[in-house]
Amino acid sequence: MARFTSLFHISIWLLAGHVSCGSIAAWWNSRGPSFIMQDDDTGGIRYSLCNGNHTPIFPDDKTLTTPFMNHPPKNKSSLAATGWTDSDTAWASIFYLDNNDNIVNALLKCDWDTGHWQNTGEYVTSEGSPKVAPTSALSAVLLGSTDGYRVFYNDLEGTLHQVGYTSATTWAYYGTVSHDATSAQAIASTFSGKNISIVRPRDDKNIGVSRWYPDNLWHLSTFPESLTLEGNKSTNATQASDLKLSSDTPPFNLPAWDGNVSALAMGIDSAYTRSVFYIGTDRKLYQIGNKNYQWSVFDRPSAGDNAWPLADSAGAPIGIANDFSTNIMRLYYMSGGRMVEANGDGGIWQTATVLASSNSSQPTSSPVPSSTAIPPSEQDEGGLSDGAKVGISVGVTLGVIALVGMGCAFWFLRWRQRKLDEAAAEAAGSTMSPGSAYVGPATTTFSTAGTQVGDPTVSNLPKYSTPPPQAPTGYSPLQTAYGQQQQGVYPPPQMGYAPSAEGYAHGTPTAAYPQQAGFAQDGGWAYATPTTESGAPQQYYYQQPQQHPHEMPEQRRPVEMMGEGHYSEVP
Image 1 (cartoon, rainbow, N blue to C red):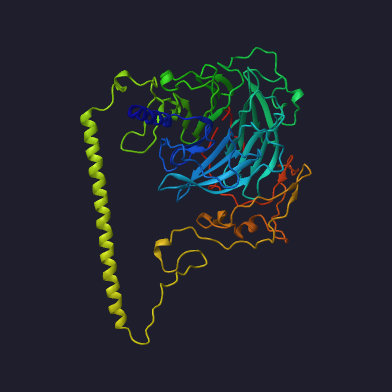
Image 2 (cartoon, rainbow, N blue to C red; image 1 turned 135 degrees about the horizontal axis):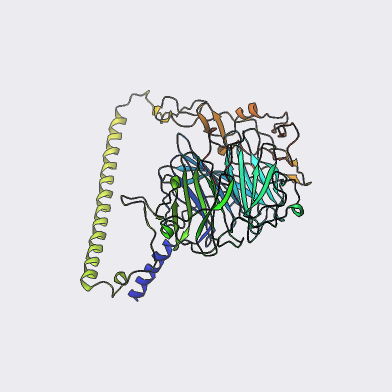
């Protein structure tokens, strides 16, 4: 029986080290990479510790998951994420599908002491947009504090759409990206400047590409086979029936590709070379790059499977953390039942590592094992000896006695001190004058800025701003483009963010935002419809009611990537 119990505990320990993996999303901030993944068994969103550096720490504890409030993710949801750091901590902005197949954005703040993410608010971003396919992938880019977010998804017909958010508006539907066919739900995206590229599986031989141009249209292409409407003739205005493949012989074939991958990843380097990554039908990792305006299959690293270890399954989930300016390129996927990091920084692929589960004096990562089997010399050959069992029993007994003794001593010292305090209080009371009276602790005073008056220890806390007037029943619903009433989604009052002289301050939504966008006379938000450079209204734009002044980093190139192609920068 004792042997059975021991084997049971060993089995649980071994299972804890192996991960049941769903969708993966990764990003890079100024400190290092981070990622999230959904556990297929529990549905929880697990994550690498947010206070890590250079290489993520991924705890084995499956109960360590992202906390959610009113919109938890559904099981088997796709994930997308961006992130950044400020002077205080790290932030993550993650996207997922809830049980109603809405795209939800959760804004997470890092607890630097524990490395755990704290949820500061959840916001539905897709209301008023074409219905999201229940199995749609998600991909997000953060263009900066002014241009904001773009999130891409597939609808029920397989059409690619986008929703967006800027510093001057709330979440809105930004229109169709591509009517072209797709063979799987996978989506990946990247950008440089205002050039955004998106890829999807097109069929069992090709990948489709959508790229944003200065003419305010998405231009479509495919590789390795090309479309019959070449050049700039295929756009998001082109119907699916007109998007046909050329009969020309393609310059290459996609290796181990069947068009049925669960995920794609994209990255870009400082030379504007864009790369698409996928796990093939043979469980190998492949890289297709666009260099000098031509797509081609890139060679595998000289280290082979040591740099790109075999994935656990064909077409498996994969995430990427990429920084354009510093040529950072990290890929995350499952190999041997563990999360591995393939490191291609500077274009040189190093030996991949299994992510460490804790931060210690030991190296934070170890080489990928060639086998998950336990060597015979390390297997159990008969359990503990009788001497070892006796030693353990004696040690446990002495430890219990010591703990009980310490508890008794602590109780006696507390009891003795209480008696001394009572005697001192009685002596002090007998010497008080008839006019004396006890006054309780002084009330702490706070300024209107939210800091404690006279207390220098809180001078660095975020300053809270005066909240805007509260409407009697919240914001009024808007009429959507689909004839349905749109209801607002409101975070708790303390979950808003307000701009301050030092950057973004944590607090309630403030009157500073109406100066940028504008309160209407009825207390609601009013914005102008976005227009193209020619002044025409933007296609399919739908504006939601103001949900929250959304946290974004300062205006600089964000560090969450996923990429396509090599081309000159467009203003």
